[in-house]
Length: 342
Image 1 (cartoon, rainbow, N blue to C red):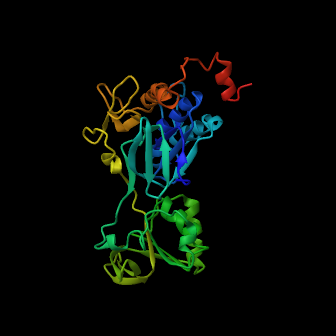
Image 2: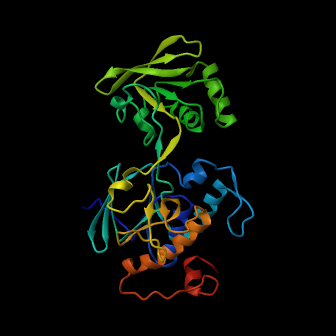
Image 3: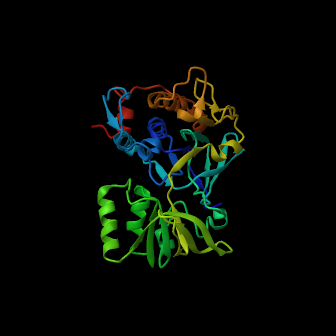
């Protein structure tokens, strides 16, 4: 049990609502750890529309998704939350009153008194390419995310896709891999122009390969990939030798393991009461787009409100012997001290 990570609160989902919840919890002296399946914070804001303007954040006429994420990260700095990215919570087990044990797909184990589900519409799951039999290679030769770059050293890597993820990992893994082949269905990319220029320069120098077409079949035994069959845009069929494939076909939203955590569900959403946005399991809260209640609006500003009320109730679980005195940041010297205000 020495490897168990202990914290007051575990926040599942590092989108705007989860990030602001860490601020509200921090004001009340509760420490938080985050787990998010994405490899960066910000949730949908950072992943789906980082440059798209948001117009309905109170007091901010317009801000980009990434800009809001950056501002929230700055705001929670005084409370030093810990982030565990690229991981998904698989199990949530109640082991005390209140005490939960949560395990991720990376094998990390957390113990906390409060769990806050702030996972938007669920967890982002990578889209699986429509390639027959690909399941047999997943986790061994086919990977949907890069957790440790060293894993790909001296490998013949086939990267499939034309967005930022595909181009970024093409450039980042190129120095490590034995050979990189980038495959996209057309010679037009949705990635940052500078990344595309760097990739084309490597191709021109003969340092990597660019192929146009789609994977139609994989070859290999016992989960070990040896090659991929590619159908070109001219209907030609060819083989690419590779021992690792990284498909980047985008993300889809799925409720995922939440359905197995013992909490009530309603149309793939989590019903909550509205005094603190607590689920039917004491100590487990749901804020943001993943929850449902009469009059629910799926707005970031509503999620901020939910996080503030959640923190008040969470304090009872974390500090059952302490009386909570409500204070304003504008007038409380103790809160200002926590925030580092001079």
